[in-house]
Length: 509
Picture 1 (spheres, rainbow, N blue to C red):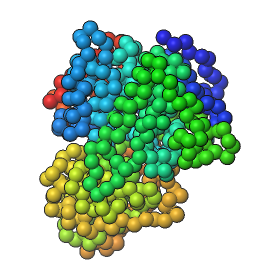
Picture 2: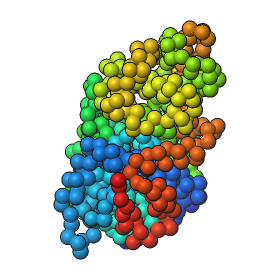
Picture 3: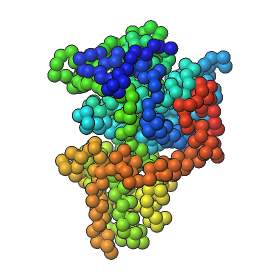
Picture 4: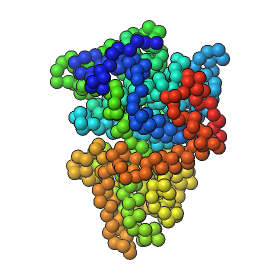
């Protein structure tokens, strides 16, 4: 086990300034953190909640036989390790498989619905507001590394938290989407650092792994462009995490990758954003080492299946329906519905090409479809609120995509860009407003929604209850005993190495 270097208990942060080798800094941070002290209970609780949420997403995606997770899981199980060998496992299996294959399969499963946690790269207290997206897709990396290395729950949880911290802080200081690079790069860098630390790699080896990934495996946002999106969108995190783990393994075998990759003038970071001073990286980086100011505390939950930037529109519609329940009397009296949003949401989920989605991957990134589906559920159930209108996998199946009422409502929806006034309020919030023109009730306006339910700065919603509802509904698609699955995945920090090794030993229907 690596020997940690002293951490600063006074500042509870580790600074990685732009004039230093930040790849080595990330490596040393990961080594220190994974074998250090547990954070406060509030941080552990929030981390565990995000992990539970991701497990429900993964189990349900496998139960409903979605293509990419099923394919990658089968690929992993086709080449099991010898029974005496120690490897990692896939969801719903005890068969030890190659580390990178388990990571690819499990990350694909938790990400498939695009329904797990989200971050927007926003930390105004430090002046870091680059606003890059990111998602809690990478917990399976820490679990697989712990299984292979024989680590216990405490080290597993610290690995999970370190991944969120590194990728979350990178998202605050460097916007990948500005350069049409996919956001999973930050998660892959975090995965390389933490997986290497958990497996016992040295600082040199982890630096090589990070350099290898950045130099050879950077994905562009081409995977998210087009009228009908493919499996590549949902599996992006999985494939990048797989590549990161392979880079770690090669580094540990002696393969030397590019050094000092954040300051390399021809690598991603300096190439697209040349720093003012030659020899620097484009940013300073500060990582939490203790206390409760971890990046995970500012991350957001999705309350169902939808692109997170549509949450403001969903909240605005729910607010209007609760305030005016008579709106649900007759869908034909809805004359039009206008949604005003900000960039980059306007370009991503209001693209005219997405007004006629034919695949789930396109529909869950189509604001007109998402809004129409929420309204269709409300009209049919005559109920309003997040719980009855929560979007689930069935809202994106073939029948739902062809549903006549949903399609009729899409035709009545207009999406407009709110301009500089709205853009300035992101990524602090999700600035959205909705205006309805109704035959009987005239014009109704939601007002500006900034912090919808699930957002880290929303304090009015009953978040624990809504997350329980979501977990129960998704998990029930894959297991007959939802409570047993919740118990198995809870209190990870107290679990033994044997319990972590058997964590995925449950049946998926």
